[in-house]
Image (cartoon, rainbow, N blue to C red; front, side, top):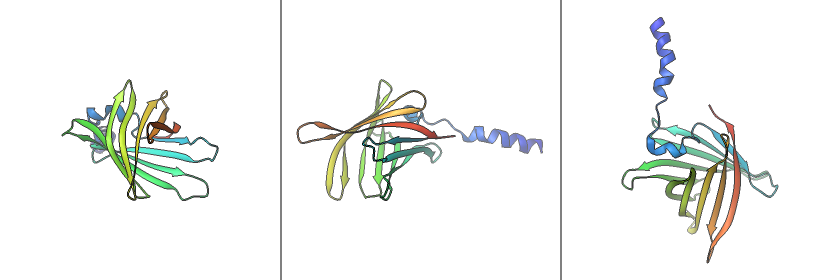
Length: 165
């Protein structure tokens, strides 16, 4: 009986393996949900929930955009280590059929998603984004879109911690 109790106590410690060092910039997101409200007073929110999958080999980000009176828009990103290019990358897919893929870098503690192309229904849109931690329980998102001749503001979100372990 004592051996079983000891195993039950130690098992969570063994199961909670440390993620690969390459994922360090994303660790603050893992195991938590974050929510922000889009500007404009329309009460449209974006919620991201991050979880490790496949023995901490990948990080999943499931997100939901909710707008009153409209069906939820769903999306999912899988973050992975690309050993060929020696960099962290993501694959993003969404419920309307769109997708994008690109690298994730860091610059002075900020997650940087460089220019990438979103593809949906034969149309493309180039965008870039930055996620900057804001204290221990929030981060700020800045997304821009490529216009005809320059970058144009897309949206800003202040994402706050809403759930976690």
